[in-house]
Amino acid sequence: MKREGSQQFMSIETEYSHRTSHQFKLTVTTSLGKFLVPQTGPSMSLVGRESKIVTTDLTFGTASRLLYSTAQVLWAGRLGDRDALVLHGAPGQLHEAAIEFSAPHRLTASPHPLIQISETPDLRTSLVTIQPGAKGLVTIWDSTEQIILYSDTETAGSLWFPGIPTSVNDSFAHHWPLGMNTNLLVAGPYLVRGIDFAGGDSTALNLRGDLIESVRLILVGLPSSIRQLTWNDQPIEANIAPAVAPTYQETVSTRSSSIIEATLIHRRDNIIEMQENGVNPFDPPKLLHWKYANSLPEIMANFSDVNWVLADRTDTNSPFKPYGSPNNINLYGCDYGLWVKEDCQLSCSCCSPLRVAARALHSTVAILMGLDPSKP
Image (cartoon, rainbow, N blue to C red; front, side):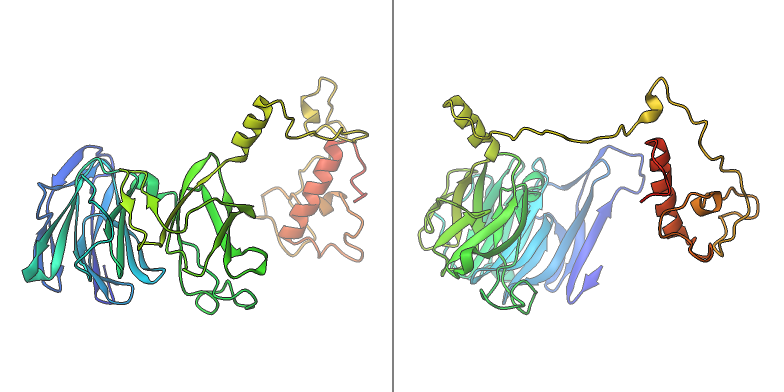
């Protein structure tokens, strides 16, 4: 596959029933020639029915370039004021990427122990080797112009890239690219639904989403104008400067202020803590004078279908004939006298499949509940 100078080479098992693991190398074509990848590792892996896409000559951000990557490209673009690339792959496999780094010095204090970067001056790129075992969200490169991240496949499922509105009062604030043209990487929550300005304050950002447990929140690309963060309108205690990466305790310099960390507490954990302290977090109201009907009357011992209408007609007055006519059974409720109040004032030409299906469902439910099907 090829698009706008970038190419994708796909490897997949030809036999669907095979679930074994295959080790191989792949020759890919790039703007700098052909390469047998990976160059620094023994091989790539296909485990069972897994597929693998090797991307070449991918331009991301404003001026950055990925020569090739055996790790999958999750996202590429701009985060904050930097070009950003996020790769992901299976944690038990080796991955390799050749990337042009725009700045010679990184802002991070130390590299990850399972990631090696080797320079190749003749190719103007650096080879990044990700050894098996790398998990979590890992920083590969962190400079004033670029940020390159990697995550294992499971962690990649909790990475979100919502758009940031550029204005509080813009009617197109949530329309890309009219009212938003930059993204924020949000890592950790089960679901991130969107971003808006808290209370109309352009310096307060509110994240909206869902949690299934308490998580460590990681934000990459937070605008420098933001001074306050909230999650579903609840304040987040976060330092807008330094952060500590949870994967290997790497300290990020205060100059790299676009990486922010905080903790999101699931409501269930708050409730448990309140109960342990003897506080009742919720006093439910008493539900009185409710009316109900049995939704499964047919399972009752005294149930009888003697009053049911037998659906055995093959003819209909509707212009929409039953499928498979003329021998298929007609299931139009109006042809059996199962009416609702607004039905068929003049003729039965209203028996279109969609309307009849709704009416028949109403009539059937009414009969099962022992009600008059002619009443809405």
